[in-house]
Figure (cartoon, rainbow, N blue to C red):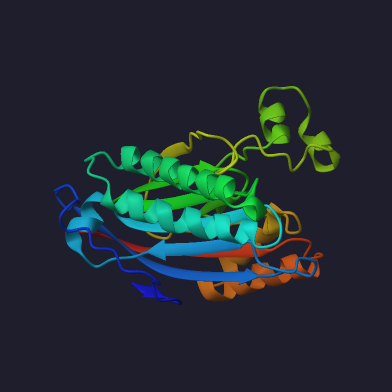
Length: 276
């Protein structure tokens, strides 16, 4: 496994991780880039990942990758995204359930409670919240965990697919047939979230699973990227550049497009799905 960054926190999971037979090990290359943008004064985006060599953890909990986009102004959004990332990973890895999706939902709910509690306790952080988009690779399965409007894409066999749904008023209105897709770009509710961590007492994430194949390239990103870079441009970069170059190029394109928000891109390339 190659990576650009070292994990920033250590987790001990030996006593709590359920015993699961290890049949496949995903070998990955990871790259990430975040930028303040041209308008904001602080970066409310946060990315984090947990990659272990412990076979017991790989079998039952896999490899974890997260992007969160905080909101709330000043330092509040930055704190919300930081708390959500760390809480989700900690609770997910230590959850006693043998069913990983149960641990994923519990991780989101724990992150939500923590952010809500901090927002209520400290006046300057009232109303803070964050999105959370998670990619979890367990053996030969990829799971997505989604709250908000950050996104996860997959490039496979020269086809780019958006694996997550935006939890925005506009996206849900399109899927319900209330408005047409061409109306979305200029709609006044374009950025109104219908789900976020920290804004309500309870939140339920979308959790979906996909088969994992060697050569798959996943991209997690905050909306600072897709506000300025079209899907066809993302496709061209992902198919033609290695993860590190692709992450830097995409963030650079968002800056050239206006850089109106913080922008974060994390790319996970599946180099091998190794049978044990």
